[in-house]
Image 1 (cartoon, chains in turn green, yellow):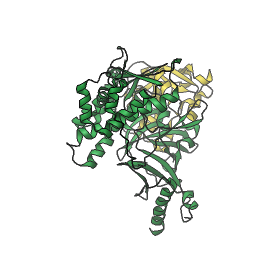
Image 2 (cartoon, rainbow over the protein chains, first blue to last red; image 1 turned 90 degrees about the vertical axis):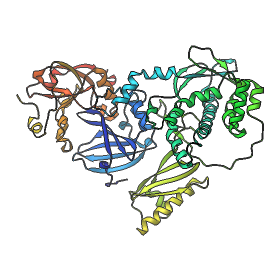
Image 3 (cartoon, rainbow over the protein chains, first blue to last red; image 1 turned 120 degrees about the vertical axis):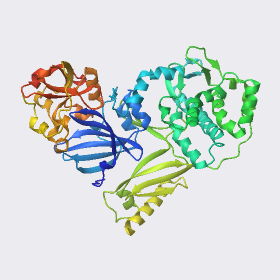
Image 4 (tube, chains in turn orange, red; image 1 turned 30 degrees about the vertical axis):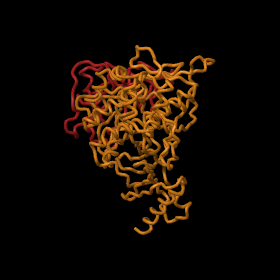
Length: 435
Length: 130
């Protein structure tokens, strides 16, 4: 889009992060969203920047050397590319898919930084907590450990990456995600009567419930998982914060426990109904019942691994009853995709649905003038480009965009996404020709 | 004795905005093939004309922090540099102070007499240049 209306002055500058004679990287904020403005090229009479969104907690991951700047850029579907003259006037902006970004505009693969903030820095307090608390150590101290191994001894107990991602981690994540939702509702639906407020709080805290992998071991696959109790300080409600900090261990104690005695079993059967137990426990049973893999658990790094109580068939059968589940109406949902670039710079896209990493609730695509013209709508500015956001709201999917400071959206009602986008194009075009 | 760019610096209030006293070893990215161009001042871009530190030179307190920062610059812009240089800067070389919100970053305003290309000595060639 050659759009001269783009206004960087609407953004609030939080801090310049990297400079070398001039500002290279800045943290900006607009409508509670965080952005990085990144100088990528000096031309003869202009500078080129990338502007991209960054999650709040990822900023701290970046500034404490846990994630690279390159990864932060690649986590976006779409970025703005902005060209500004030496007077500071924007000459041109365009939306780009990350794969369209000039390769020379990316930083190095190892673009990590250890930011040492001054006392007046926006990040001073939180980064000092991270540095001083020995962050990873504190996460490790609070971690529990899950081990997957193969029952097929011809490969030792080695786990293939495909099995790891498609069977083991996806089932573990699916179980954890169900547990999160069900436990959140059980904990808070009596305290918060308004469903919309409840749903909003759940979505707000969901990213903080992400169990962080703090320890890996190879051969068999061992992973230490921990809830981050430093970044959760951003959650203001004490009860919600307590829930977030403890839900990982609660999941371990109820679902992945090595002992489930009769009292615990009664408690599980009382608290969770058939359907809830199916959603929470069945994915773990899928791993156990495959007879190909073993899943074991331990509470601290120094202990020995133990089998899950669910491995006991009589306990498993009581928890997950073999009731035929009536077919559920099909919900549409946004499929989360991650594009990664391998060593040969080939792009691969991975479906992240039902993995530990799929808490993102939206994805973006670019709609260009050509998309209007292809549908016969010719009275359109040839430079028009809009970002369409696919968003999950209360189990419904909406396609949204902003044009002319107005929000346009449609709810997805069929699997034909093109048709749904066309509906949105119709609405926007009608607006354009009538304004 | 005047600083480089003194006329421009004088137009900005409270510039230079600090003065670190004593000797300090500072590091800067350079290009050994065009050493003169390794010390450009960005205040000449009109948008930075009123930015005090744009009339000085960026340096880093440690070699590691200089290298780290460089890796965070776009690959295209990194190609302008091929080495890290270091210099022990004394009080009578100009004005230097920690600047910005990163404790590792310093700005140095050299005196006109200060011989930048010869004082900043190459300390490490970058990977691609070795």
